[in-house]
Image (cartoon, rainbow, N blue to C red; front, top):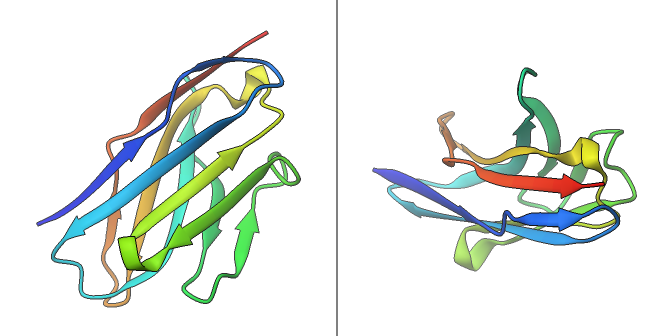
Length: 116
């Protein structure tokens, strides 16, 4: 059984910062890509950022220059540093882990609310 535990979501004022964490545990053969999606009320889940095993990253245009994704392979943990937050960043943020055998696992989500 694979479990992803997210933390770090909170209420913050516009311009502020938050750091999300997501720790994976359980029977994961080998983690490939790790990343984050988000879903605002009434919207579809959208891609935010990903990081590969080699450290290559990719970001949604809406967060480039403000968000930074990183990972600690020894801890099977992915992080999302979010700076210069905007009200439109308000959403539930979900982490995911892409296993090398093809399975994808999701966290339960953590709420980020940015007030104007």
